[in-house]
Length: 285
Ligand code: PHE
Ligand code: CO
Image 1 (cartoon, rainbow, N blue to C red):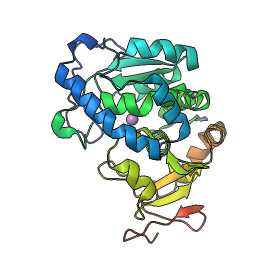
Image 2 (tube, rainbow, N blue to C red; image 1 turned 60 degrees about the horizontal axis):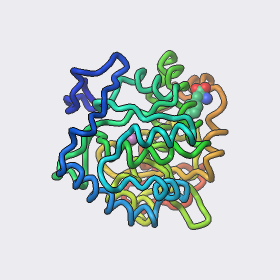
Image 3 (cartoon, rainbow, N blue to C red; image 1 turned 45 degrees about the vertical axis):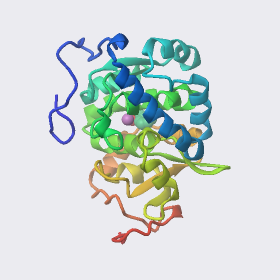
């Protein structure tokens, strides 16, 4: 398996099932790995209280998974009751269609391995801390849970239509790096932010990046950076907006977008609803 940038992936793909799932083998995590999880969790806990949306905080407190690397089967009992989702263990990143098929069937793939201590602040590939801490709590929210399934179904269709790149931008700017407008101010529901020690404060407090209102077609036309903090974040009003905006058939949208040049990640358009215009240099569209 190779990742998006073509480098060799570090997970063990030799013993998986055809759908890329493996057993979690929870007993095999070392005491040092559980200790690293506790450190990661503790750092994130205080940040989340200030920067995460209420939905995330509430579930996280209820689940209380900070004592060590969680067991998927224990979470799955609760998740089944809440939204009928399940976590499945995987070696790491998956081929697009395999990933979409899991989501379309309300299964969220979670990487089994934990980063090394040297990667405390930054990791290239998603590990169990990102996948679990960032993604699992949001799957307890009924509207968001339905959005994720619809995304999986949409992915299978986008694959047939050759539109995965456009749809992937939507995932990136919502599921991974999405912001939400709340009575307490702008907060985050994006897993890439929620599991990050640095970007979680940056995305909300820093004057550098743009914060722009959610706009489906605009997002699907906007490139993103995978190796730095984002230059632009998109803000939803609530999860219903996300679900409703993405409910229509995307086939005509893809047709419309195909001929257009994608925007740079830093672009601000005259038509954008600007919550904050980034002050970092080279902002002109
Ligand atoms: N409605 C989209 C389509 O027809 C599917 C989708 C739903 C995509 C939710 C993303 C998020 O392709
Ligand atoms: Co993720």
